[in-house]
Structure formats: C-alpha cells, structure tokens
Length: 472
Ligand SMILES: *Cc1c(COP(=O)(O)O)cnc(C)c1O
Image 1 (cartoon, rainbow, N blue to C red):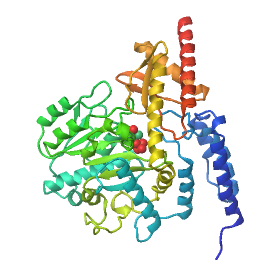
Image 2: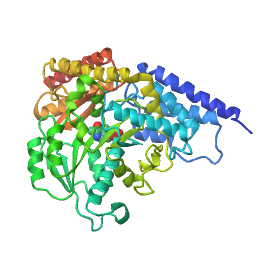
Image 3: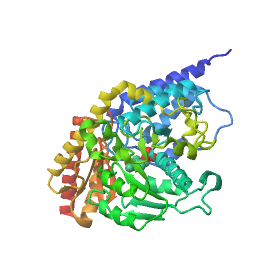
Image 4: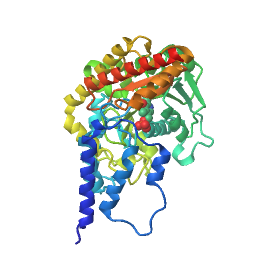
C-alpha cells in the first residue's frame, strides 16, 4: 500500500515549520493585518489553474501570499472583540485532528475522538458547575450554541403544548413568547431567526448602566405573558463583562414555567474560579447555556458548546432519530446533539488544552485575566480625559476619550492610532449611543507587560489626538 509521497511529506513538514515560525514570530509583527480585503483577494484569488501544482509549492505559496493579511489573534497583545489566542497545545491537537480525518458523528465508528469530545463535555459541565446530567454538543461557537439551545427550548415548550415541532414545523403551532434583554448579543437574534421565532417578535427587558437585565422590568414583562415563554439571559456583557442577576430573574421566569437560556459565550468561564463564581450566583438554575471554547479556553477556531439540562430536549431537537434517547450508560453520539452529521471532531483541541492546563491552570488563567482587566481599568481611569464606562465584572473594559460627539471622534482617532502603531490591538464599539474602545483580556499568554504596553500606547495616542484637536 502506498504511503505518503515525498511531496506530501514535504508539504506536511513545511506546514508544521511555517506554523512554528509564525507563532515564534508573533512578537515581531504588527497585530493588525497589513493589507486590505481587496489586496488579499487580488493575491489569493484568481482563476483556478487547469494543471494543479506541487504539494509543497502550494503550501509555501499560500503562506507567502496570506502572510500580510493575517490578523494576529494569537498574539498576547490582541485585545479586540473577545478572542482566544489559539493555544499551541490545542493547535497541536488540531493538526492531528485533521490528519486523522475522523467523521465524529457516531461513537461506534470513530470511538476515540467521540470519547475525547464526550470527556470535554463532562469536564466543561463540571468546571462550570452546571447540572451533571445535562446533555451537551460541541458546535462551531456560541452563535450556533445559542441557536441549538433555542431549538431545544422550542422543542420542549411546544411539546408541553402537545405540539411536535420537529414533525409539523411552526405552522399553526402555539406561539412562543420570547423575552430578552435590551442589550443582548446579536448572536441571540441570529438564534431566534434560525429557529423561526423571529428576531424582532420579542419582549425587551430594560437593562442597567452595565447592560445587566433589570429584575423589576422582567417581572413587569412576565406579568403580561402567558403560554409558552422563552427567556434569554446573558453571562458576560460584551462591553462591560457584566452578569445578569440570575437568581431573581430565574425565579420570576420559573413562576410562569418559562424556559430560561443563558448566552454565556465567555462569561460562564468565571464559574471555574471559586473566588469569582459568586458573580454568577444562580446561573446554574437555567435550562440551557451557550459557551465558547474558542474564547476563554483558547481553543483554536472554531468551537463552542451548547449545554441543556434536559438532555431529551436537546436530542429531540437535533437527532435525526427523533427524541429517542440511547439507553442510560450508552455512549452519546455527537450527531444526536448537534446540527451536523459528518463533522470535524472540534472538541479534540479542547481536550488537549484542558488536560494541559488542568483545573488549576484554567482557574489561574481566568483569574489572571480578571485581575489584569482590573489593572487596566485602574490605569485607564488614571489618564486625564479618559472615561472608563465598565465596572469591574470580568475581563472586558470599555472606555472612551473625551466627551460628547467630539469624544466619539477622538475615541475613533485614538483607536486608529493605537491599531496603526501595531503593538497592541483593542477594538471599537458603540455602547449607550457613544463610541468606545473595548479591551478584552483572554489570551492564554497575555500578562502584565502586554497590558502595560496597551496602557502606554493608549496614553500616547490620546496625548497626540489632544494636541491635534488643540491645533485644529
Ligand atoms: C462572542 C459572543 C457570541 C458569539 O459567539 P461566536 O463564537 O462568535 O459564535 C455570542 N454571545 C456573546 C455574549 C459573545 O460574547
């Protein structure tokens, strides 16, 4: 039987060499991309050749042509959005995942990767302190995890009304009232669209100045509702990192037999740190949760997890076999808990990262990021003219430069200078009608020196922008 050709071996080894060189060289690169999408398209698009090309040549050319258009999310000085830094141990496992090429739909056919993915589900449920018997599925990210959770909610809520939504669809079904916070992440709107519930057919609940859902307003909204109800909460506001007051909210939702879902893309990870878990007290009382693996756990893209207290609701919504549950003790099949059939074993990198960090390493990483966010808040607050809008909640810091409309312009100018300098990379946002700069700290290697570089570059840019404004 033929093994690999010389060219194929060279391509694999070249790719590995490029991967190591890229990661080793991160410190010498600007964090942002150096070319725009048009230029990248020019370099990497074009007509497909008739002839084909040698394996190693393809890989080398790809690396050379892609290089300038990479965003250095793996850099410890990448502070934009909420992005994990693709932990090298996860990358190593991911390479093997591709090499093994497992289908990862059924335990019987690909038992080893399914065992690893099931272990990741159990470990994460345990680390987050969620109900042990929950069902879980590893999907592409929190967007998909939210969508799957909403479909599980739809299944359970309508089943209670005697309606089989998987068989009959939503035509003529009892209406589900959806209750959501005024500052919910856009991914939850996508989930409502995907599930056919409508992104705008929702009851919005007022939030406080950190984006937390207000319990008094939820009580007011709930009082006007009857029938099947889905309540969507959030763990980790994308600008403030703040948490909803779960105990009060869930009590009021439960009084109306609502299904409670929590979008906890990054924030749920605080539950892994005993000293911080209290900030999310009561969150384990919900029915379903969405959490990312590619954010705070630093799994390479893409991976997230949906967790559902009543496993039969998850399986009922996802399995092609209906809500038949494998016998207790039988090994769960990924295909019963996720939308896909054939799929990448995208839990495998997380398996390696969790084993590498251990409980303590994970705890220390999350706690360190929260501490660094506090340091950043304090330092930014100390710079004259900057206004930090986020309180200490988790790993997100939102601030702006100056006041009013002029402040919006100044904030954008400061961000452009900071990103343009290329040493650190925070991102923009709009919050409560004002432009902000958002700092997210979740890279596994991010430390004090990286945050110090961020503070220095922001301070320098703000001084420059102020000088410019004075002379203008
Ligand atoms: C990032 C994020 C999402 C979307 O997650 P993806 O992994 O990008 O799909 C959803 N909700 C919140 C709160 C987030 O921070």
